Image (cartoon, rainbow, N blue to C red; front, side, top):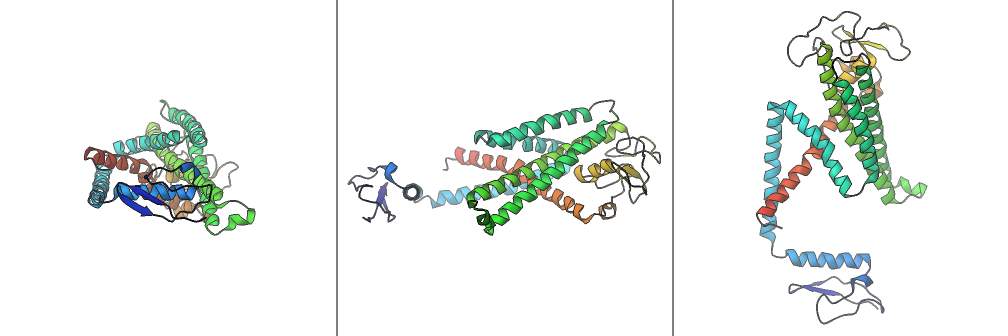
Amino acid sequence: MAGVFEVEVDGVEHDHGLQHHNHGLQHHDEPHQFDLSKLSPEEKWRVEHAKMHAKHKGHEAMHAEMVLILIVTLVVAQLVLVQWKQRHPKSYNLVTLFQMWVVPLYFTTKLHWWRFLTTWFIFSVITAYISFRATRKPLACTTPRLVYKWFLLLYKISYATGIVGYSVVMFTLFGINLIFRIKPEDAMDFGVSLLFYGLYYGVLGRDFAEMCADFMASTVGYYSASGMPTKHLSDNICAVCGQPILVDVSEEGIIENTYRLSCNHVFHEFCIRGWCIVGKKQMCPYCKEKVDLKRMFSNPWERPHVMYGQLLDWLRYLVAWQPVIIGFVQGINYVLGLE
């Protein structure tokens, strides 16, 4: 038997045309006197939706004020972050790295995302060990290669994971998941999760890599953020790790090749790849001439890594600072008594 269900909240009546059967909801003279357990999920949502409309009816001015506060706060926060990054880049990068590491941990712990917490713990332990090795003095001769290999591996894994996640999302949008009899919500959840893992660890890994790259390069003495190099670079020495070049540029190496930049300085393959791509250093570690990546990487499939790195730079703001800004806005609304 079909019927019309009416909800009256604070003197406002909402007609949502809900359907019920003989054993279902019975009409009462008093408002709110009905059994929600007998309603379907869709009917429950409609009841809650009606209550929300009744609760916020007549609050248009307050809502407009809240939107204005949000817009102004976002603009001011963006200006402050830009000025901070330009004037004090070292402290900005350090605080951003801490935000990137802690903010997702808080939300995933609150939501009980144990798979993410497991991967986060494994990443933190390994990266902490690598960072510890990179900050030791004197620097062990095997440390630079170990550091760059780890972050290059992490970079490639995060890149591949992000691409797979994005592909799954697109396939789900086009309905390809139905061919394999996979529910759309399950396929979308899987794709979004992979995309989140790839982007998050890609951003976090790049920041740790840059920190380790700067510290190690200044430790071996060839690179400094400002000023001239503190050591003379021999023709057969890699300026990143300080170890001899064993494979000629024209020869094919068994484990890795040797690269010569446009400034004619030579480096180990793992060292210069980590320096230029993972560490975001687009210049020669010794003479500081800008590196020509197109000339250095002849394989066209490796060039998208650079664009992917730029994407991660943009996402860093959304992951590290956006939740903080939204929390600050909610604090302002609470102080002003806005709901």
